[in-house]
Image 1 (cartoon, rainbow, N blue to C red):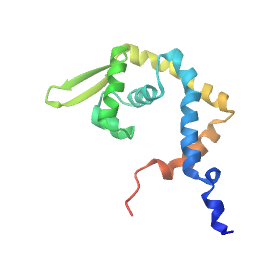
Image 2: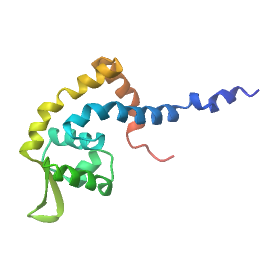
Image 3: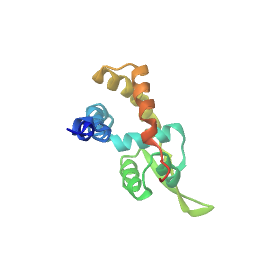
Image 4: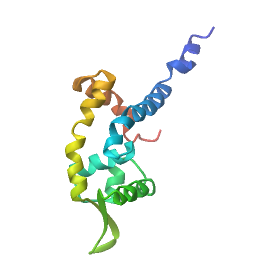
Length: 146
């Protein structure tokens, strides 16, 4: 038996563990976000906007590591919910700015409980969450081509 055989077992694959974890994270967040009326992707958009608003669609897409074409329908749904507005810049109509509405800003107060609820559901502390997040950093950013 080749000693490298173990390296090809599914359960030993980092990629499999990350993909499985990503699916499970979304399902853990779902019941916590439902009372806020948000999906997981919408929550990520709102988190970015709570940090800085208004933001151009392009800047928001870059920060969220999404294509603008993927982000646009999410933002449109948030607008339909009255949480954000999409406005063309007067000085450059090619740029679409996304800004929070009063309702979008108010939702932040209710969202303050989300991280604690998630940590309770998975039995982790803030330090434990930070360790997992930091451990994933090499896989989260752009990688140079080899």
